[in-house]
Each structure stands twice: as C-alpha cells, then as structure tokens.
Amino acid sequence: MTDIETPTGVLLGTYTPGTPEWEQARAGLCITATEIAAVMNLSPWSNPFVLWHKKSGLPVPPFVATPQVEWGNRLEPAVADKWADAHDGYGIESTGTWRHQDRDWQRATPDRIVYTNRGKTIELLEVKTSPTGEGWESGVPLHYYCQIQWQLDTLGLDLCHVAVLISGHDYREYTVEYDPDDAKLMRHAAAQFLNHVERGERPDIDDSTGTYDTIRRQADRYDAIDVEIPGPVAARYEATHQQLKAADAEHTQAKSLLLDALGNGRNARHLGRLIAYRTAHEDGTTRSLQPAR
Image 1 (tube, rainbow, N blue to C red):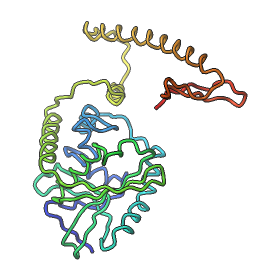
Image 2: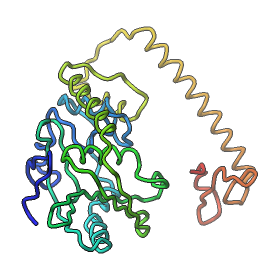
Image 3: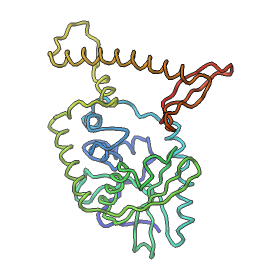
Image 4: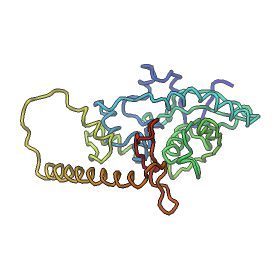
C-alpha cells in the first residue's frame, strides 16, 4: 500500500534522521512528538528550559549518540519485524514527518504506520528498546505516552501499538488508545510554550543538569570584568556550596564506616535489604563501593 492518507495528517516528506532536510522539518516554531514530553516537563532527556532555548535558536547541549541510542536504531527494524510476524493480516510501512492539517506547528514522525482492511483501518506502531524493564512494569512510560498521544492527535488516528525489546531478549507489546482530553491538554501547553518563545519569555531556572549545561553555553566570550551579583543569588550559592562540602564529608565518612563493616564481603545488607555492594581488584582490595539501585 502506498500514498497512505490519514484523517488530519499532512505528510511533509520522508527524511533520513540527522540530515539537513530532517532537521529543517523539525526546526522553527513547531512541537514534535519527541518534544511534547519536554513541554510537559515529563521527559527524562530534556525540559522546558532547554527546549525554549532550542526553539529560540540559542545554544543547547549537543545530542549525544550513546551506545543505547545506536543499538536502538539498529534493532528497530528487527523489533518491527517481530511485531509484524505476530500480527498477520496487517500491512506495515515506514513513514515520514507529518503535520496537522490545521496546525502547522504540530509535527510527528511515527516509527511505522500499520493498516488492515486494505487501508481502511490505519493505526500506528512505535518501536522501542530499553536496557532494563524500569518504567515498563505497568504499561508505557509517561513520556512515551505523551509522544504517542501527540502522534495520534497529529494524524487523527485512534490507536497505537507499542513493541518494546527489553534487555535484548524480553519482547513485550502494549497498545495506547487516543485520549482527546489528554491531547487537548498537551495542545494547550504546546501553544502556550510557543507563545512564550515568540515573546522571549524564558522559563524559570530549575535544578536539572540540562538547565545548568544550557546556561553554560550561553556566554559567547570571556570578559575579564567584575559583575555585581544580587544578594539572594549570592547567598544561596554560598550556603549550598557549604552544605555540599559538609554533605560530601559526611558521606565519605559514611562510606568508610560501611566499607569497614563489610570487610571482605560483596553485598552490604540491612535486615535483608541491599544497601550497597563492593567491587574489587584481582587482589581483593576495593575498587569501588556502589549504592544499591
């Protein structure tokens, strides 16, 4: 099947991730499905502060192609094939970047479009990989749920299948149904966010590493000058710095006490609960003391 049409989606094109064309389709004042969780402050990888700077054309921390990302991309076709094998009667196709027919700023790039009844029933398939099952115990993690709702709302579809491969061998399937109330909530948040970008109204500084790394990249020169800092900012920095030093010292002592009590052992437990574990060199001396996850 080709030339798939969806109720509200307009196909902009099919682009290779990382190419200038792909970046252009996602650039400017628009919100993509992978960005909506950041707008809602539910993303583990970004937040409104970082995304605001990106949409404003300001420097942000660079994307890091970790081994997890690389293998997720490499395994995506295999996981999609596994889903297709388990769902005879469905057609499955890769697709491109879409926008909503009435909202040019609403964009989505689903992993796959699947269909039955000669294309009369069109649904989505999202393919995920995860090194652990954390977050998948009771369904699709919330940030992925936001992504899927945004895709369904953009294309005007009712159902998305989710195929996930966990730890390289644990294959699972889920489904997410379209929720008009959740979609409306996200559309409102996205529209407000883009208005803030247009007005130059920056989100508040939060306590995340992403925000700190974004601020680090805003200075474009190094002026040998003095800058008068507001009292509350100066006081908070000095107080928390002293608290950090004290906490570091106290934690170092706590580690020494725990390691001393552990002796030649590996796992430190209290009433059966794992507290920490020791890794060792070949001669038995301690390499590190790791907290329990």
